[in-house]
Length: 324
Image (cartoon, rainbow, N blue to C red; front, side):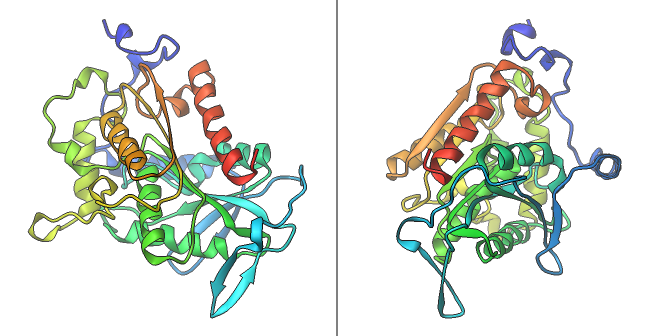
């Protein structure tokens, strides 16, 4: 019965737990993440942005295609003076790792970031943002915004050709970052790449979800993650910048790519957000994978469905950043 619930390509599904991250497991998982980080060679250059935020930078080994300046030499205002992208400036992706707002590190998606940088000939920057519950909203989001502003000012980066993206909680932060960037008006990302984004805290109150279909991220984990991220919410009010699904006006946002599996806890909230973007006049490509669980593309990266998922991501990025 379990096997029939999942995509036949995803054979590991029946062996995976429904719940991984909880308040009890978090200390152990953080320790294991740290040990794993020391044992591997994630690559990329670690750069301190400020006292609290650092990034891991992945650059392509060599230039693969000519780099004309972006149309109209779009300008980013810095200190009152227009800063114009030079002819050789590269596009960039700001990547935000997942982990339920409470776990993870910039190095964990290094293979993905390296592959994107090489394949698309762009710079990929993975953010080391501070985690909840020690650092609840808005700190992680502000850390991501700090990294975005830093990236837009870097020599050799075209500030008019920056995409933002992430997976799971990182994708939720990327969606919130797109909203924050719209509000502040300093930087205009050209794409939001959202892999099974964590968008709506109200999913935690649902009682109609089939728990048999969950893998790795369940209702139990979701409640813990949102409680940790939201912290002490005055009068029960949740900021729409904390939970993007609560944001009323989605118009004026960058085009989006949203990918999610039908067995992902976030499936319904992601579909609803995609439809709302489209209704607001924002171009949004939706990639739904039948029978796929949360983070399937990371756990079973070599499967055909995971490779198709990755190809859809790279195609969206290539079109937005390279015009291909």
